Length: 75
Image 1: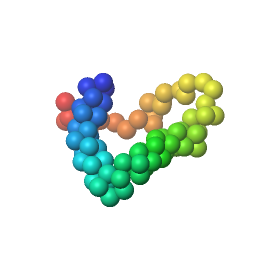
Image 2 (image 1 turned 90 degrees about the horizontal axis):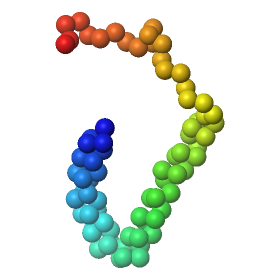
Image 3 (image 1 turned 90 degrees about the vertical axis):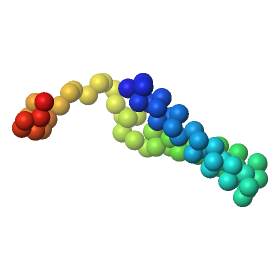
Image 4 (image 1 turned 45 degrees about the vertical axis):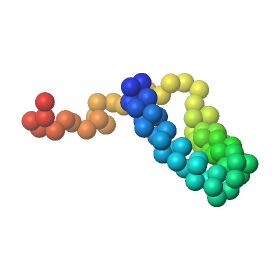
């Protein structure tokens, strides 16, 4: 899981740098930093509006009946 996360993060860095460069050309440094700061609020807002805040205990794992069976012949 850590390797997948690192790969996705490292792969997104060039795109983020290019996007930031384009925003600097369009909005200037101050505007780009304002956009970046505003985007930092989005994950917090999503977390606060999700049902995660109401969880008090770890949810039970799904029962065997709710897990779909594996494809026939798949190894």
